[in-house]
Image (tube, rainbow, N blue to C red; front, side, top):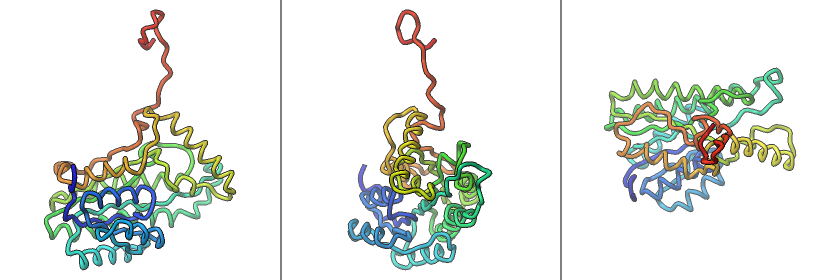
Length: 276
């Protein structure tokens, strides 16, 4: 399909790089007008310039809910509408040796950026949409919010909270024809994984990331790496009328990881490949 978002005005937070950039590029290709919200000014401005007249950059620190309010109001004032809100921006918490070594000094910052931004973005976009015929709100969580695991507990907690908040908001805002859904990506190569390592030089950081990526690949049923474009396709579905009867869902985009790990199989004596 083409031009599925023609005439739609969209905000993508954290849109300058990674998954956010993939969503911006896909939405622009489908005809949307996209406001790229990020603190990475150089990357954001470059992406907006590359995207032509259908994209603009707006410096936004999503950890400050006043700036989110300004983002929404500025978007509406400039373009006269807001049809789709993608709350994508997120950061990782530092990766420590174990829970006993966690000092939780990053708790407030991670929760502001990862969770407060989603709650404020949903609220502020919802206020406008409620008075203008509805819309679609898409919140980005992570498989780290679905599956328990060791390491980065603050990050995992923030992403788990997004899942529950999304469902609560979906129930409350359905009355206004506002759909609120959640995407939980996993195994997508972006800078956020490397940012969780602390105090490492580049070579150690690369080894760390390669080791984690290899473990992720081993654990998931689909062996190819996911891409930001894979997540963007899911976001496109949730943004369009194809999902007009879909709200309150959590859509994992992670190669089947949450379905379960692959179990080694034994072949029958006949060698026909039947699991023993």
